[in-house]
Length: 126
Image (cartoon, rainbow, N blue to C red; front, side, top):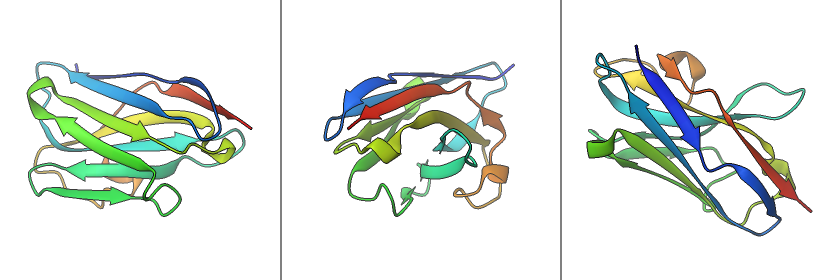
């Protein structure tokens, strides 16, 4: 069974930084692309960032471009999200997701992903 476990959420003041991690495990786990999504209360889950490390491509939502950085440690099956210059509107539950190796689908869309973490809360105070 594949598991994705996020960590690193918390409370931070506007302008501050947080770093999220997501570690994947499971005997059947094999992936070449992972992403981060977020969901604020009363809103749809939205795309934040994604990485396809075999293609060397990253994707970012316009709202986080220049402030967030996604990276991966393939040896550890871990993806990271470095969040700088945080704003109150970044407050949400952040979810990581993984797409099976050789999977298809646009990485900015939820349906492209096969596995999801349980989420970690990020709260940015003004």
